[in-house]
Length: 422
Ligand code: EPZ
Image 1 (cartoon, rainbow, N blue to C red):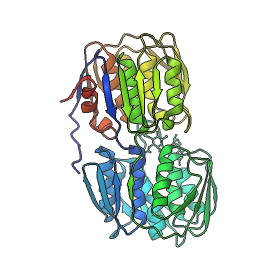
Image 2 (cartoon, rainbow, N blue to C red):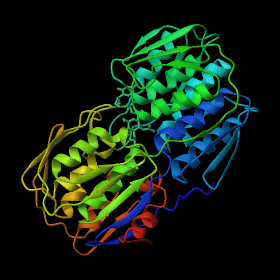
Image 3 (cartoon, rainbow, N blue to C red):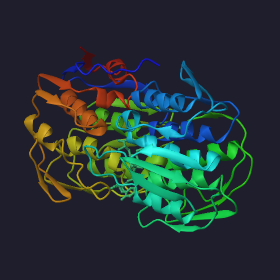
Image 4 (spheres, helix red, strand yellow):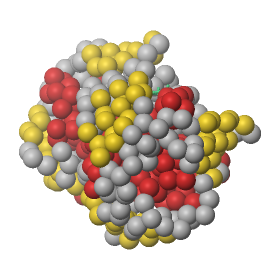
């Protein structure tokens, strides 16, 4: 579990190459982190395959090891044994490196009746509150005490109840679903998030013996109290990585097949790509992306699933900068996910921010520049811009990107891009 903490590494990109060929997406980052946390619910060993070799997986592995679990990762397979946990505390030194660590709270509460997790800080795309997580746990009977930067939760016995989320939060839905499997009685989660990663987590829990209905719909029903056993499971393909490669292909004037994921998980995105003029052919487990000489401007708004995914907002912005006409991209999920636009404008984009809207002038001439990633998806967008720009682009702070993209430079090179890590 070598953790890449070298902050000096950068991508060197020379733009203009046409991308051709096939690329396999790795297992979904935003699912596997939760499956790892769910493994805390049983004393028996769990085995997860199709696990990407990315920073966040290694940090979550460190979190579980800190709690006392045995974690082994090799060739894309994770062996987890949470039989011998010896603490229920997750320190800020770990949480500050990955705010998704908060997802261990539900399973620890369900198993031990106690959990202590450091308050996650903000991040570069918004404050990222956790009030929906904590409110739901309180409704299930947990006592919450926040002090000294830590969240202490206790529950002698969690009780099933009906919880209404006032926003379909992915993390809150997942934390509450995992707490509910350890609660007495039935828990109803209304206005639940519907992302494919939620469904993947529910299927994982069901494979461990849990009783869950409705994952993927706004109403999830969990019947608690079933003893949970170990399991073997393969993570779904990463739909956001797939979308990122589709945009790379469209920008490069090439033709690329992206495979080993379910295109049904990207329907709104694929519709948006078609409306822009990108050729998209859907297979069972793949899409074939064909670029066009001209692209049309578009009005796109990010929304919770099945709406256009916020995690592809920075990337599609680069494609819209090449379309004919002015586009409007509205970010409805996070309050400040436009931080990276200044870096894009340094490469020749002409994007103006007006509140939650980005106004993107088309047909911008992109030129290579030295830029820095501010977060995972913004970093991916800068790489895409570098692939389309004239000349050389240097992307710094690529550790942000390597948290969520496995061997990005190798995969792009295999498609004909000129990119290397230095
Ligand atoms: C998950 O984050 C993903 N991360 C994010 O992907 C993704 O952008 C997001 O879901 C939305 O799809 C992981 O799965 C690890 P939310 P999460 O709770 O669970 C507000 C990436 O690039 N909110 O649905 O944190 C919150 O402030 C990352 O891979 C509350 O107000 O997302 C935000 O504005 C980025 N109170 C909105 O909801 C709460 O208690 C969406 O948050 C919880 C959330």
